[in-house]
Amino acid sequence: MIKTYEEINEKIKKGNSIVLTAEEMIEYVEENGTKVAAEEIDVVTTGTFGPMCSSGAFLNFGHSDPPIKFDHLWLNDVHAYHGNAAVDGYIGVTRMADKRPYEYGGGHVIEDLVSGKEVRLRGISDTTDCYPLDEVDTNIKIDDLNQAILCNPRNAYQKYSCAVNSTDKTIYTYMGKLLPNFGNAHYSGSGCLNPLTNDPDYETIGIGTRIFLGGGIGYVIGEGTQHNPTEGYGTLFVKGDLKQMKQKYLKGAKFEKYGVSMFCGVGIPIPILNEKLAKKTAVKDEDISTSVVDYGIPRRERPKIRETNYKELKSGFIEINGKNVKCSSMSSLFYAREIAEELKNWIQKGEFYLNPPAEKLSLRKIFKPMKQTSKLRFVKDLKRKATICYEDCDIKDVAEKIIEQNMNHIIITDHNNKLKGIVTSFDITKAIGKDKSKLRQIITKKVITTSDNEPIKIAARKMKLNDISALPVVDDNNRVRGIITSEDLM
Image (cartoon, rainbow, N blue to C red):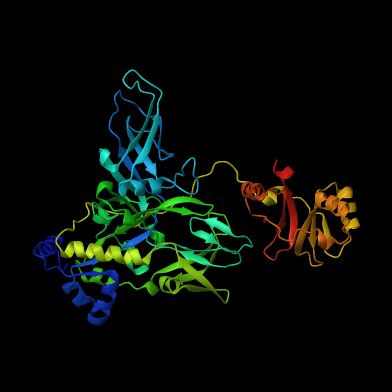
């Protein structure tokens, strides 16, 4: 031990503490070494600013006259949770507005409150003797609330996987819009500025740690949900007074065809108590590894394409199968740097003091998947043999097979069984009506497919979203292995 919290706080009080951001610490350690850094540097500040889906706020509205006990309540048409006392509620950032889904949600409500805007509160109730009012419809601002507590069960992920899409279809995820055939890559997190990256052993981060949260002061109140330190994916459970916070660091977000969330700024000071912490806070982007994961496969264990690091991710391109793929961040490095700098200024001005954690976070927690007691069925359990015609067949041959096999869907392949398209009985009817004689004139070439190991509920969702009634079953080489239809699923 070189320094203590008390000694560092005394230096902060006197205005002579030495504070660096995590990026500045890298340069300082390179020039002076960890021993000198441990002696000279008092605090290293960190920062991250990205979408934090597991976030929300507890709000107390005060009692109406006559009183009401909410059964359901809405804020700007966003359904808030009520299972607490009469006029307490929790607004989650991923809840979408009833009338503007995918455009506005709980994160936007929180941003509006912090910015000082009026928010419509509507609540309904089954009346009781002590709560006789059945409905409230009013407008409120944040100052009208007794308490507004930002309470985020999972923030400040230690790192994120890099998301790509190997399929032939664009997909829409919480990691953004992923183009087909590895058309782009998305990652999140601030790398060497990330709080948990700078103290991965939680020497200084635990229950009670004072932090920068949303532009105000907050606290770590425990490990976050899905805390997975054994794999390098630690998370934090944090809270703070929403009334102290700034709109700049709490931004509602919308993700195309996925949903809504909120960007939240988190910064944590790391006191340099010893040489070990000086070394850890000088971690470089190239030393922070993560996996490139195929989000086109909707399974718990998505395939890992390769390992990468935050230096490569921040370069704007990653290499996949010999191809340079454009890589973009879902979080803001600009704001992460600004948060680390603002926290640094608070400490240097004596406006922010450090406190030791009352209890450290677990380093051994193992993240477990959901326990499923019902059997999950896969496409391979229900698929049937496909009726196939080659791409050089005549329309008449296809029509005959539809009649002989009593099938509405004919799969078109080349002579090596590779998928080329699909034809339906309705396509044949249209061809006859419009006097078309060539099979290539009626083939649907852009075909939505499935695979043996895809859950049938996902196959059903593909049919529903694309308004189709069958999916060819193909292998990794696009060879046809069967077909599954809406009738099979029924």
